[in-house]
Image (cartoon, rainbow, N blue to C red; front, side, top):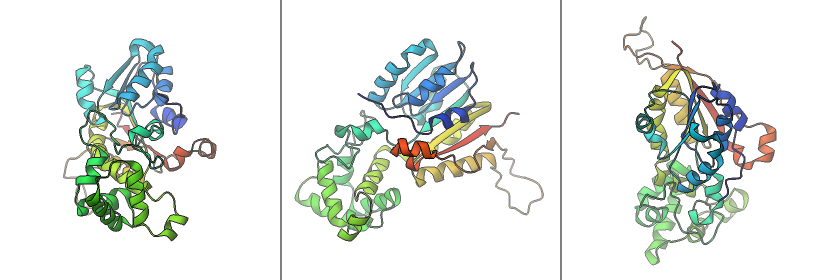
Length: 314
């Protein structure tokens, strides 16, 4: 079990959190503990760190990596959507910082049997971030209607050939259940013109992304979590989120903007009448992007964007 890849936007994320030695910090997507170990190094004896992840492999790897920090570390197997419940059970009402590193981890992509990668031919169609879930990518591919497949590939994969890909999947499964990533890749390839396949990236990338997002409800979880995470911040506390595609980034950007300026009064009203008060400010007017050095060292960082929100200090 190797979580050896360097964490994306590591220095920028740590700096964005403005860590206080005696503060409480939460990593909602713990992974192998790359960001977490750097946060913990900056905590004093009274500091506290809570790591949340739904992946059993990540929990095991991070537990090993962070054991040097002893009692200041608490690791919980859950989805960050449940952050309010996790903290309540730990007797914590507010924290000084929360951060998320969204999307699929390098370990999950590199472990063929997890079924996330479109570069392995004989992996099972799994894609579960939480192995306790009963539904897998295989269920989506073999049971969703053609219309449902079209909509998730179009909306979550933003693939212009979504209609044809959905049609090919339904046609193929009528002959035989689709069981592996390799089988699905071949079906997708057949649905995309050869000229496009020759010039674009991997033809299955967008469809695999779409199925993974649908299976793990990634966008719903993100949409439902940002406001509650903002509410859990102490005055001056920060929420830092790394996204990897436009759908995630759009949600973060919009929720941050609404938390900064929630007023719903018509623009021509001289004073606010709705009574909705700002929770704080968006620190990053433009997202923080990886440096040229990081881009050359870590291909996974190519599409990464970091946005930061700070809770009002009053």
